[in-house]
Image 1: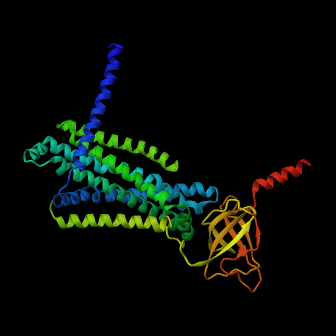
Image 2 (image 1 turned 135 degrees about the horizontal axis):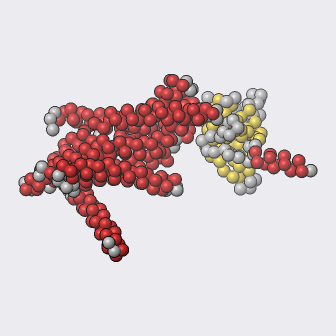
Image 3 (image 1 turned 45 degrees about the vertical axis):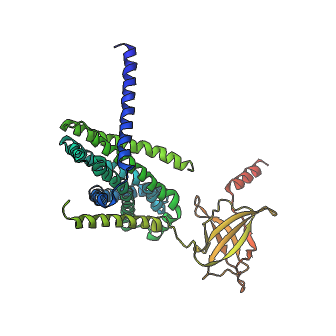
Length: 262
Length: 151
C-alpha cells in the first residue's frame, strides 16, 4: 500500500463519518421538525415514556441509593481525618448534583434504554416493518422515531433528578442513621453550600444535553443499522459505546463552560 | 399496547416522582427559600476590614444564629466596610453590644459575632452598631510577628 493510498483511505473514512453525521441529522430533522398530529402522537409518546423512563426507574433508584451510600462512607473516612465530617452533606450533594447524577444516569440510561431502542428499531427494520409503514403512507420517522426520541429526551432529566434525590437519601442513611452524624448539620451545611442555580440547574442542563445525544444516537443507530442479526448486534454495541463516549466527552466540555462562569 | 390505564398511571407516577425530586433538591438540598425573606429588622455595622465575610453569612450570639448578613459595601468617604444584617424579629440587641468578625474553627468561614452588652436600651431598625472589631487577618499578624522578630 502506497502512502498515497493510506492518505486516501483516511480521507474516505473522514467522508464516511461526515456522511453518517449528516444522515443522522436528516433522521433527527425528519422526526422533530414536522408538524405532529397531537391526537395520534401523544399516546405513542406516553407509551414510550413508560418503556424508556418508568421501566428504568428501578435501576436508577438502586444505583442512586448505593452510590450515595458509598460516597458517604468513603467521604466520611477522609473527612474524619480532618475533623470535618460535618461537611459530608455538602460533599455528597455537590458531587451528585454536579457530576455523578447526570453522568452515571446517562451511562445507565444508554445501557438500559438506548440499547433497547436501537435493538427494537433495528429489528423493525430487519423484519421490514419500517418499509411496510412507508407503503401504507405512514412516515416511520413520525410514527416510530419521533416518540422514542422525545421520550428519551424528557425521561433522562427526570431520571437524573430522581437519581440525585435517592443518592442524597442513601448518604443520609449512612451518614446520619448509621455513622451517627448530626442530622441538623448534615442538612444545614448542605443547604449552605449547594446553590440552586449553579449546582442543581446546571446538573439538569447537563442531563438534558445528554438525553438529547444518547437518544439521538440510539434512534439513529437502529434506523440506519444493517438489517441482519449481526448488523443489529453491532448497532446496539455502537449505541452503548458512542453514547458513553459522547456523555463523558460532553461532560468535560459542559463542566469547563459552567466553571468558566458561563 | 395493552392496558392503557396502567401505562398512563405509571407515566404519571414517573413524572410525579421527578417533580417531587426537583422540589426536594430545590428546597431541602439547596435551601432555596431558607429564611431569605423572613421577617426581621436591619442593622448596620462599620468595620475597618471585613476579611472573608460574605453575604448570607450567619450573625451569631453565643453560637446561635440570630440573623444573616444581607449586604457588604464600602463607604466611599470613610473607606470602611459597611455590613448590613437582618436580625430576626424575636431577638433584640442591646445598644452597647460589640460586633466582631470571627472565624468558625481554624479554617472555617467567617461569621459576624455579636457580644451582647448590658444596656437596657436595644438597637432599633436601621441603626448602626457602634462598637465593632475587625476581622483577624492571619497574614497581617504573621507579617507583624516576623517584622518584630527581625528587630
